[in-house]
Image (spheres, rainbow, N blue to C red):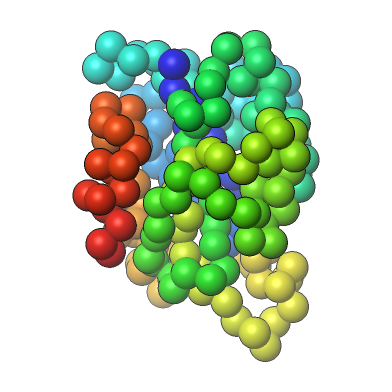
Length: 186
């Protein structure tokens, strides 16, 4: 079983914010594949499906970003999911807007959602799709990540949101090493 987790903050005030790119990608994938995220368990909205014979859960934690690891841990425990079968989709300030990077492990890099996941599951060896949101050093980091995407930024992000559908499908169907080779040349 695979667990695809889009990170973000719950609530209407956070819709279309930079920190919610994980939610946006999961929502886009589910919408394009006629999946409705309408189940609620352990403070997470999710849908469970089968893709090419593999059971897959798409999850949007409904605790704030810095507590999202608690939700991930509960899903891993309840559904008996190995950390090697998890893909976390998160924003990254250090990557240019519209670019992305796949990583098989690493530190939190200052991202509170990744930090909490690592603390809660006892390891930072989980796979990530890091989506670039750039960094505006003239704006306080908290205000920047919680700021809404402009229309121009949304146009730039449309490409990565579409590519992410292929990345998710390939994560389900191939080894992560092959996945990184295929997609980390962006």
